[in-house]
Amino acid sequence: MEKIKNVVNNSLESVQDMFDTNSNKGQQHELFGYDIMVDDDLNCWLIEVNSSPAMDYSTPVTERLVKMVLEDTIKVVVDYA
Image (cartoon, rainbow, N blue to C red; front, side, top):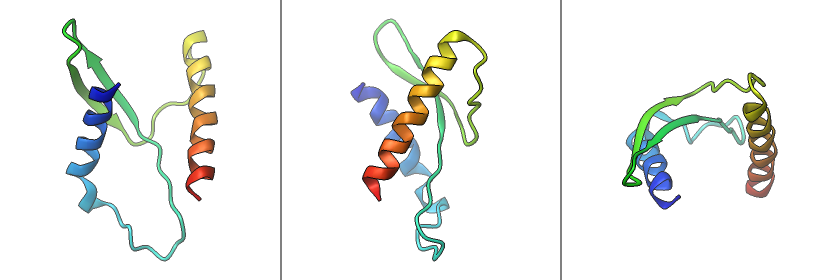
């Protein structure tokens, strides 16, 4: 998990100047979808980042994952506020 966190942090740091953090619009949140490949040596490889990840229930697995993501997103936003 630490390697995945590093991939996400590094990718966000590389584009941090593209975000408007001084906006007068109040708090803003955005959900990103990360596609990360983990190889046999547990190295993490960033495949892509989606700024509008699909949140549909296309399979039983994605239904469970999407529900978890939505619940966790609310928890993070409420705790952050």
